[in-house]
Length: 111
Image (cartoon, rainbow, N blue to C red):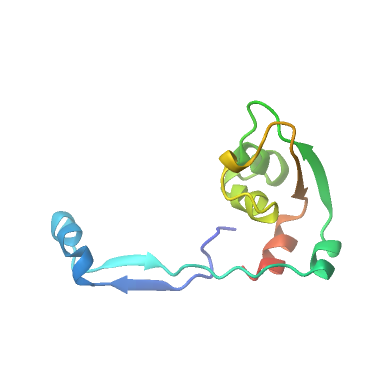
């Protein structure tokens, strides 16, 4: 299950990208529309089982996603759930929660 399975594909032929298109020999560039994630309600969060994780030296979001979901591409689910857009936003010793069922999380997010 990919992150972009349901996203709309846009054809971008704007002047802004003209140099890039010429360089690549393209008439237009295919881009994915930016997904609109919804913030889960308290009720939504209560329905999601999570596990606690203390952020420690060597941790990476993609490694945690691989460990818990079997797929590192879902690193953004952990980041989003904890309101930490990047690993730089996490501090050593910080408690984060990892939702255990990625399919349920994606459903709650509207993805």
